[in-house]
Length: 83
Image (cartoon, rainbow, N blue to C red; front, side):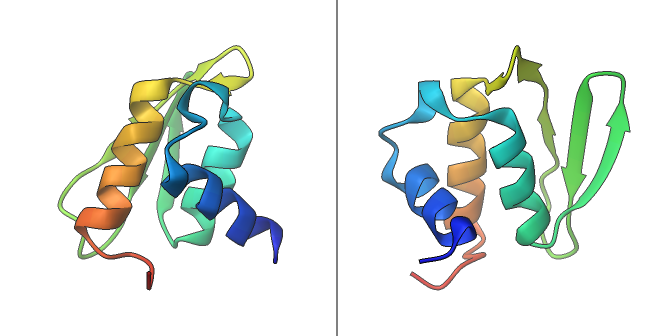
């Protein structure tokens, strides 16, 4: 199992929302083909065929739990992966 697959499984399981590294969330969005724009501490991700924009910012080295949930819901809603 690749690191990308492990991160995806960790995200989709929903058990580690409070313990998800910000850098891992960024890597995951990059692997899913999102474009990134950085403005200060805000990392803004967008993608063709996805109507929503993801705006994430780190909380020290961790991702904020509600933003991890947003990314998970976006992946499921737009069927960005084959489950």
